[in-house]
Image (cartoon, rainbow over all chains, first blue to last red; front, side):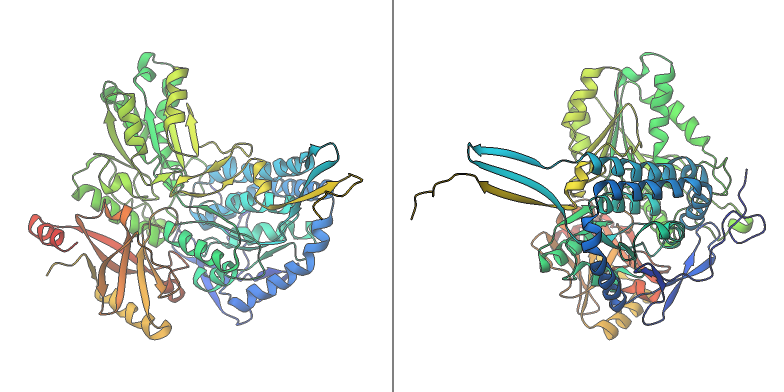
Length: 506
Length: 121
């Protein structure tokens, strides 16, 4: 089926002509009254207006968050779990609408928002609802009369800066653990994708006490900076580029607060020769694993953008892979049959085009795609790129730089050691894929690759219970998994003596 | 003389506008993720330049353009051409406030150009 464009007859989603900031449980216009147009990459048209906030709005949000933090931090884990579960239920009840809203704003195929982004967000809230209830402090007996008790306490008020590639899921990855741990949040959506988050907040706003969640819209250079440098936050979490990640870290030094940074990757996807030992479902799964570079139009930090294929299977495996790439259905992102939609923005579209040019100039062979995709008619001004497969060597720029588009660079290896050498010859270390029928090969490869997440005989799965984060320049800290609670908490140690006599020093 | 970084007339106009508006500015070519692989334009002093950052060029007399040395390893043989396009990329880059985005386009150096470039770094 094809969903009607939002705000047209038969549409499941109606965007407001203008949104505001969400501060202290109210929709508050930006202090200076400025707005910017929000554009859908599907047609290139503006569809709503978003506050172009200034530092004054960040201060208002922080006032609200600080007013709420003591009460929220003292609620019982059971209560917060209930709230998170209620948020999950509400999102699930409105899943279709939210999926269409996000697709309209981001450009990704609606089958992904319907089946991945939004269901994962729902599950993420439920996971942290459970996790907070099972969290326990710990104590150690230092000696018979001395006990060290450890308690987890909320940090207080935290800042979160969200990327545009999975607007709702990435907001959820940051929000769910922060709220579960008893923090209040000031969140800044990406400039490119604020409306889908605001759409969700409208649906869940009655479930949270005023001030616990605050959304301030605007640009990094104005509100992002005002948030990250603010004395009144206890942590800043950011997903984005290395140059901005460094900036955020530098900002965080001003007030000596912790940062979580997720800064991208150039993930290797390694196909060992034994995958071709049989022509079966496993091989079919491996072929699909290669084509995962086109998921989310390639706009994923863990995009398997480097495929390393054993030389003995290269020809036969690539034959199958290229057939599957050719079968990727590109079209209206709101069509549930569409497999790959639009790139997120003109900037992203132009950047990918520039890398297609670089790849060709550097001498990479184009095995598939290699150009823009003109869908014509109402999509003529949208941002569409052909799924592209380059063949080349690992020292080429298309092998080393994150393109953030549906572009994979393929090379071959002759043995295990060379595969690992190529895999690790990158500045990044976020994701990786390993494909082998042999447990020992898969295990050894997985342990040898310097990356935070090594998918083994699968790719692009994001369950809440699996830790996600980067080695090397891919960032600091983890997201997902109950360990995430810890990064939104302080550890309080009470060191208690039950001894009756003095220590004897004085 | 061959330059490592060139700017298009549109980009230069924006650079001058941003200098007027914000005072001294700089570029840092970013790696990684959503708004990465793009030239970030910051106010000078806002971003702490470190020993890992190579000064590739000074644009328009007083606008330094830096790149992390790790990224430069793969960029040695290409010239960056800073262009300006509609729409915003990274909101932390100053031009985004004007609804525009700097974009790094690339040109492969010819053998003669590369020989000259190698001498200067």
